[in-house]
Amino acid sequence: MLIKRHISCLLVFVLAFIICSLQNYGTAYANAGPPVIMPVGGAGGIIFENNQSIRIDSEQLNFVIKDSDYGDYTAEVSATYNMQNTHDNVQNVQMLFPFYTSLYGRVNFLDALSSISVTAGDEDIPYTIRVLEGAHYEYERDTNKFIEKVNTILEGLQEQRELNIDVEAEYDVYYFKTKEGANTVTLEFTDDNDGFIFLGGSENSFSRHADRIITELWQSHLDDHPIFAVCNADSGGFAIAEGNGNIERIERIDDIKAFFIDYITTIIDMGEHNDEDSQQEGFLEANPLFLEDIFNIALSRDYNPQGSSLSPAIFREVLEFAVLGIYYQVDFDAGGSKDLTVSYNFSPYMLHENGVYTHTYIYFLSPAGHWKEFKNLNVSVDVSSTRYKYLLDSSVQFEYDEDAEIYRYISSSLPNGELVFKLFHEKELPANPYNALLIIIGAIACVLLAAVVFWLVIRHRRK
Image (tube, rainbow, N blue to C red):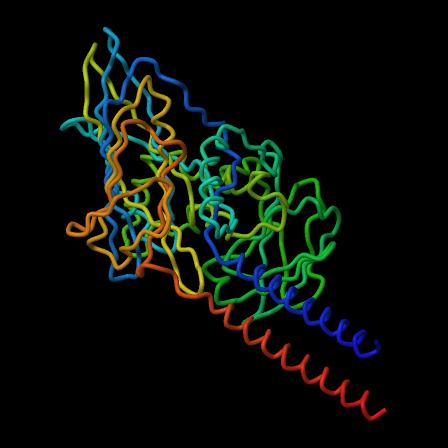
């Protein structure tokens, strides 16, 4: 009985060990995946209204997937709609075309946005670009669950944002100075630490502990990018508690939104391959609300719930994965029709699965459901110019033309939900490397268990 009791305890221990190993593996691996937009909405709320005048008789949606020499992966997209005005009067229709993309770190910023075009027949249609949403990092390996999340994105844009800061209040700006070399400096709130809202300047690391902020300052960076802190004018400000340096209040701000928009202009690289400032200036002049959108998203309670200890990264992260909106107007003659084409390039999700990267592409189909009627969707995905030729998952059922290397989907009506498809450079994902590790752990556990059982049996016999 004693031996059986020992063996039972050992079995329970080994089983618990293996379960814990599986749980730890799952938790770690769940951190490697694509970011998903939080459903929180634009600054003023974005709502698609139903139009009972315009009918879509067909949509030809083409994706050309390409690899680049820089390691970027892009989809060249063109969506051509045959649209019919069913009324006997002129229709001037405002339209919004939302699309999901990555603008930071993978592709040239201005080149990506300059790929956008809107035409009606032979006519170029003027447009403006807005940032509708930025993405938090929510990872989801299961394709069906991921598609469910994607299907909530546009619905969530209807909600209005609530900012973390009061744009009507006054704020103080404090600048830091330090000696040559890297210095760790501890800043101390002299009064109300709730007044602190931002620590900006060069790339730096900092942590906040109760009434103190510990930050590392580099003099080489300070020369071109002064590090500064912004706090509410009603708070007591800051003082140097420890370290080499000093801090001084420079100015009081009565328009915090304008201050941050000017700052965002300096920290967001509009294109690493573009040296002409005029290109960035021209883009911002043509799209005056682009930076204000970034401000509204980054400082909203839903996007950044903590509402304090903000750093420059919070603004850049908005554009790492974002929903952009192309706004334009199309004029229809009475009873007339037009072929409207929207073209753009965008980057995929690069989801890390089983030690490799898969590419997931998103296209919003649901806005087309707000027209009077929608008929005849024809989708093609051309993979002849990419290594990622194999379709692993999708929200619709594609057919593959092997000779042309094109996936095709044809439907007489609009599918439910958005279009999502995942590509990889092999037909199947490789085996999960953690499975082999778990097998080894299990084998070692079994050997140890057998050794202990053998020892207990020998010991019992000797007695």
